Length: 417
Picture 1 (cartoon, rainbow, N blue to C red):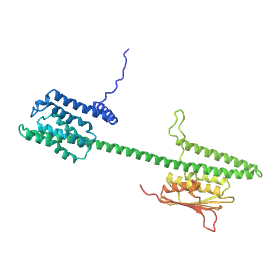
Picture 2: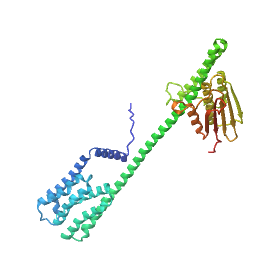
Picture 3: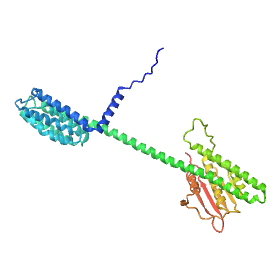
Picture 4: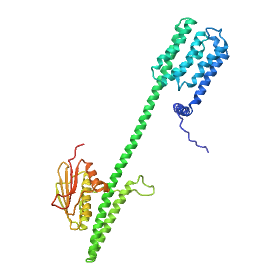
């Protein structure tokens, strides 16, 4: 039976080289001295081979120079390269006397071309203006060599050096430009990542605020209704057992409804569905068509509520939810703070362009407007919902001599997108 083997896709050569290059750069950043010692050691060995192998005699203009001088110049032109990356200008100045002696004596060691490595690092790490004096510093020994030990036209000693300097500087500038461009892209990526995280945090904060509003509206209203029903049932228990049973039944119904709404809200908050659990059953947010059910629940607690509607409530779901929640919160506050014998009145007006005016008044005890320091979510939640549609909300005690509380909402007409 033949064995079937899965062949891995061949990695492109460019990606392989880029990965190796990244590893080399990362190692060099962690251990820069290792690379500097290896490269400097290579050029020092090359210069010494040129000295011990008498290769320098093939290009020397004057062969009658002592060996110690040739050895000294070979080391002086190569050893300073160890600091070429950190102090390129100082290295070039350190090499310059050896290069000048090399030209003056006519030894003409080829190790003098190692100055081009320093030019590359000046172009890579220093301001461009430094290239002018570096060019003059490198060219001067060649002028001296052409003057003291002429060999053919002077251009043969000067022009090739100038061209080599231009090439080394161009390579350094190109590498520097690419490096700066890469750093700019990386900085942009970092800033975009920070901005993305900030946007995510803002979205999470907005979502937490929305969830807090929904939980406050659901739990706060239903608990107020349950409290009113419990108080009424306790009062009726001694005189009318049937009314007490009705109150208990209404409490149970309201509790189950609140629990179901809270469970649906918490199901929406789950980040992901469990593989062994069915998807959460989602229901739409309440709208003005559910207003009768809300008012019936409030009336069951003993709070009389009358409604007056002008116009047809043909509104988008978001605006309907805002009106619904404001009515719910206003009635909840009446149940909490209105006291016995309170009544509530709701007046709503709609126009054809989508503007809404809502006024909820009650005849309870009223009182001063709660401050934000108390930690309440009712009025801030209503104002946040209203602000989403550019509306205004006024809430406070009714003017003297009237008694009670008044909530006035106005949503302007919808602006076309």
